Length: 310
Image (cartoon, rainbow, N blue to C red; front, side):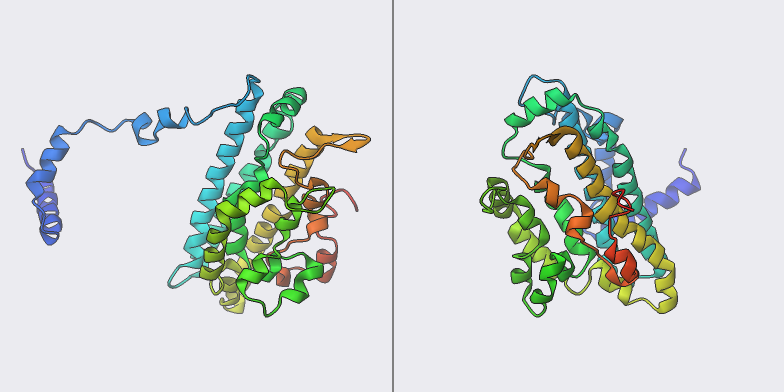
């Protein structure tokens, strides 16, 4: 029996498909013949569980792979929220706050879960299977670099001592001086590692396009477009955002690197040969997305308190 409510829905569907020049009955046939949706098909579970392809027989390599895959999914969620801030035709303060809260929650989850990497793998297994991963490195996360580029004006991603010299340069030239490029140089010669050369070949065009697309609508500039009262509402969330991405997250990587790669009297090079001792500590690279939100004292001590250097 067709109720009035169902008849009304059918009428609305007819109008919807008629507006597109389509016949509703064909779509109803499709519903009739289609199988019921299942959880495993909807999230592509079989595909997901078969995306891990270890290169060695060490069982803890699977932990390493899966954790990095989970990380990249959180980065994708973060970029989706960032785009909703940067490209909103009219950005209300409530929408801004909602998306910032999402991003902060994503990074809080990542930061708190990093113990999976720090304490969740056997050190001797890692030091062996890592040799089969050369020259790949977590340094090569293109999504994380996109998060940085979309978050702030590009000169803020240049090492502080070099920052004054990039004012007035075009985006391509500023990208040449972005801080992470010096983090993947050979320790002995200062030349670009193969890790960096591969990374640039894969992503630099994307980074240039993204920098150009966000030069006028990154998160920092969208904040500056708010009224003073609206800025006051958003400021605590942006400070949290800055700390999560530029202090807490790299500190977890540093902690992991010390756990697995520090071996006195010599430090073991990271998988891709990155200069992790200088590159990872936030007090060394001093990258801040929103410097206008921090006091001079806070900027001078960026990352130090969290590093235990009080």
